[in-house]
Amino acid sequence: MNPQRRALLGGMALAVIAPAHAQPQSELPAQPADEAPDAPPWPPAERIALWPGTPPGMPATPPTPSLIMGGRRGERLLSLTGIVHPKINVFRAPYPDGSALLLIPGGSYSFVSVQNEGIDIARRYTPFGTSVFVLTYRLPGEGRKNRQRVPLADAQRAMRLLRAQATTLRIDPQRIGVIGFSAGGHLAADLATAFDEACYAPIDAADTLSARPYFVGLGYPVASLMPGVGHADSRDNLLGPHASEAQIRKHSPTELVRADTPPSFVFHAMDDDTVPAESSLRWIAACRRARVPIEAHLFEKGGHGFGLHASIDNSAARWPDLFAAWMHRQQS
Image 1 (spheres, rainbow, N blue to C red):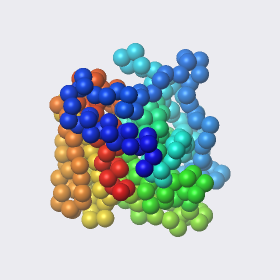
Image 2 (cartoon, rainbow, N blue to C red; image 1 turned 180 degrees about the vertical axis):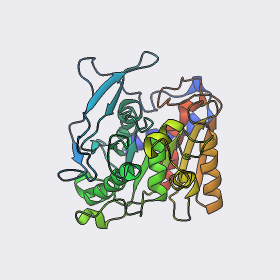
Image 3 (cartoon, rainbow, N blue to C red; image 1 turned 45 degrees about the vertical axis):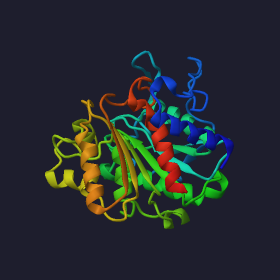
Image 4 (cartoon, rainbow, N blue to C red; image 1 turned 90 degrees about the vertical axis):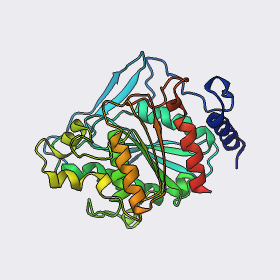
């Protein structure tokens, strides 16, 4: 175990048992520093295209790519729309221990939140040995064929490419997990329950490899699309506004958990008024029925989309350490 990984685990033990004001900040991962306003930290220098040439299902008129800089609570938040060529965006660990995360940002399937649920999360984990790969996936509501399976095709292809290029990327192909947030949590859960679904025609040797993640992390996920439980905008953006009950059920991961679903970690704030915590509660119940190992953390407060930005006096701020400890146990 490298010294930085040991420092992280030491910090995690204290984070669980000590009051917030007593956390040893020097041992915890530093919050990512903001870049200069005129130098957006996107895209990273190293990127891997998912598809050679034109991705499958390209509409006659491709969407227009756009990088949006917005914000809340004074933060700068970068997001993407109009993703024509989906990519794996590489954030290498300086001292890799072989562990890897495919990171799927949210955005209600209408944009991809590459900073709050991408760059920031990647920077949290790479100093401690885990290489992180942020997925910029195609959005379903931009005129593509088979819209409901376009994001899953990208996630499956990404997992297979990471395994195919594991040696170059200095990762263990058997230790690649996935973590997703909000609608990205839906996609991560979709990958965990439909990793072997034929979403596209194989194109090269990478597609002979498994797309099953070793483990799955879900942050305030849209784990269900069922009415009253899921997020209506995410559902409509994925399936269209007139999806039948059968279609909704078919694309609700909580209805599809099975015995070979990977072990999972889920966290959610009970006061989330965008994606109800019931979504995570149903995922927990489904995992228990299927006897799939699960660790869950339900926080009293936090709202939705907090990423790494929950205040230090909010227990939701501790999810990164809790997840890191759990992830390490899965890989031991």
